[in-house]
Length: 239
Length: 85
Image (tube, rainbow over all chains, first blue to last red; front, side):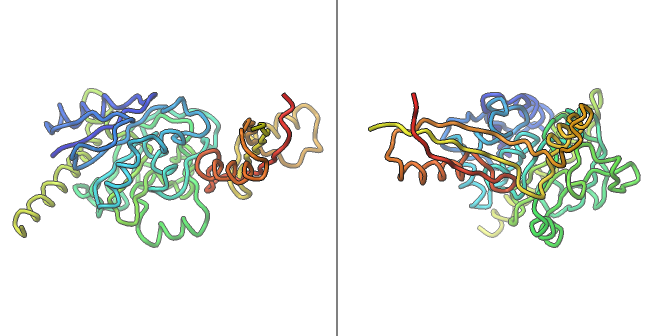
């Protein structure tokens, strides 16, 4: 499959995302620039982590109105796959492609750790290869990762099964101690109503190698690969 | 066309956790300012706008909705005044 990774001024993890899909998965990867106006036919576009525009104004605010975001919005509206990681998640919320917002960690401290993340939904392109309730060890590194939304929005997300990941302890319980940033309902990642846009604060692209953190992130990238493969096969057989 | 000065005040919405405000409140209490019951930390943005005064207010509000404030977590207030410069 063909991946695209967008670099904004201040992106940090674009290289790791490209490396994960290109060198580890062996897929084709296209480096996209924030001033580009089209996504060059990619199946899945990744908005990577980092500090786009120095986090000025609000994290992701300026990036959310950069030229490429029109193309990302069109891609999403057409059912295309969009993955936002960390700052990418913040950008998607700022762009209105995902609900809620990510604000300063409740502790006011930057958090850099490996956390346990529970896969709450396996009916998204990012988690289709996971077992329901599977626990992943993924790194987090952010100062503004506290997910907030008004009570109606949060209730809607729960009811529609759009909370894709939650921070839990090692037995899968979403405890306060297991929550690294104070996110409401321990939310670590959510998806759009169409389930084709997913954002999460933890970094799967930093967990694709047994030497560093582990390979749990690979399970997510492989899910996308399989999802796109199945969609391609279905299109070929029906076409 | 003369410029006007737009003052934009962006504040965390009621009900949205403001850990920064809470931390400032604790520090004020530690300094003996125990009368402080609540602190909310926001942003102040000043814009010098080349436009007629009435049109400017609408334009600046549009800027707030598009970029300067995030309606999910923030409220904003716009004041249009003379540019003293």
